[in-house]
Every structure is written in structure tokens, then in C-alpha cells.
Amino acid sequence: AVQPDLAGRHVVVSAGGTREPLDPVRFIGNRSSGLQGYALARTAAARGARVTLVAANVALPDPAGARVVPVGSAEEMRKAVLEAAGDADAVVMAAAVADFRPVDYRGSKIKKAEGAEPEPIRLAKNPDILAELGERRRAGQVIVGFAAETDDVLANGRAKLARKRSDLLVVNQVGEDLTFGRPDNAAVILGADGSSTEVERGAKEALADVVWDLVAARLDPLPAD
Ligand code: C5P
Image (spheres, helix red, strand yellow):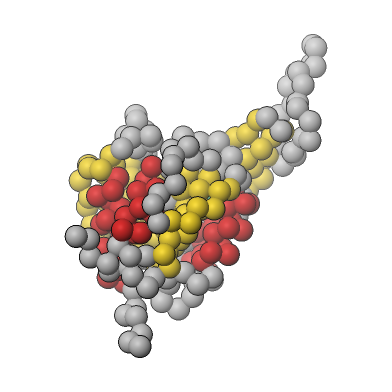
């Protein structure tokens, strides 16, 4: 049987990939499937946590034991995550949040005009939810980010961990179908305390359990009642 080491805890997990709308039918999106975030939600529930899963555009069945909050864009995800994080013991940002969104949203479908050049898409920066969580963290709250890197994986990961003031950063190498849509994953989990935990390629559930082990070790003990 699984140890209920997250009993009495509220954890928030974000999953999937945000979509930034251009018009009612088009968006800028990414390849995140939501599998890793859903594995995190499922394993946390199995370990006794109350789980809020903020899911962006995921086509997977709801994990048992999680409250699912569906969102579309980064701005919607920000609202849902910050609200759920209010009383959370841990927040794990596994979602791929778009860094940019189109400046102009067209209320009706963009048409191609005969003979005219297409208009360029102007982009604005999205809020960095993970960085915001790091800034407004509650005492004792554990914050975990993910980083998909293609180059200088560890150096970039260390820099990102510090910049976003997270406790843990799960760094995976992406590209050439190493992660997206696959049931397995491999990662190095960096800690703000200087620790580094290597997780060999295996089921996304197995990686999720290592993440919760590291989170559980960083939580303050529950008050004895
Ligand atoms: O900076 P980068 O996008 O590589 O950081 C990845 C981490 O930051 C992920 O945990 C992702 O969920 C989070 N993130 C975020 N808001 C953004 C961009 C990324 O919370 N706008």
C-alpha cells in the first residue's frame, strides 16, 4: 500500500499547455499533452493529498481524487492557480505556459484578403505564474517548477530555479520526441538547497512519486491536534 504521507495537505498541480487565442478559431499553442501533470495529480491523491488540478487543454480522463479546474489561456491559468494556491501546501507547475500571447484578439475570424500580404502577429509577454508564486509564497509552501531545455540543461536549470525562487525544478531534456506525449520521462530535479536528484527514464508516475518524495521532505510537520 502507498504511504499516505500527503494526508492533510492541499496540493495544486497545473498541467497541459495554454492556448493563446488569435480569433475565435485559432490560437498559438504547444505540444504539452498533460500526461506528466495528470500523473502528478493521480500520485498525490493516492498519497492522501487533496488535489486541485488546473488543466489547460488536456484530452485525458479526470484523475481519481482530484478536483479539475479547466482553463484555456495563460491568463486563465494564472487566475485559477493563484486562487487555488491561497491555502496550498505545495504547488507544482507542470503546465507548459505560453511565454507570449497575441496583442490583438479579433472577435471574428481573420480573413485572407485577395492580393494583400498577411498582417504580422504582434506578441506581448504573458505573466510568469511560477515566478509570481515564488514572490508571494506563504510561509512553508513548497513550490516546484518544470523546465524543458534543449541545451546546457543543468546550467539553465540552476539559473531558472534561482530566478523564479522555486524550491525544486524538474529539468527535462526535450526535443526529438523525448518527452511530449510519451508515457515516460527522464529528469534531473534540482533543489534550491543545492541538491540534485537524477531520475532515470521511466513512467511519468515514477517521476511524479520522486517529486512528491522531495516535496514531502520539505513540508513543515502538520500541527498535532
Ligand atoms: O521559463 P520557462 O517557461 O522555461 O519556465 C518553465 C516553468 O515556469 C514551468 O514550471 C512553467 O509552468 C512555468 N511558467 C509559468 N508561467 C509562464 C511561463 C512558465 O508559470 N508564463
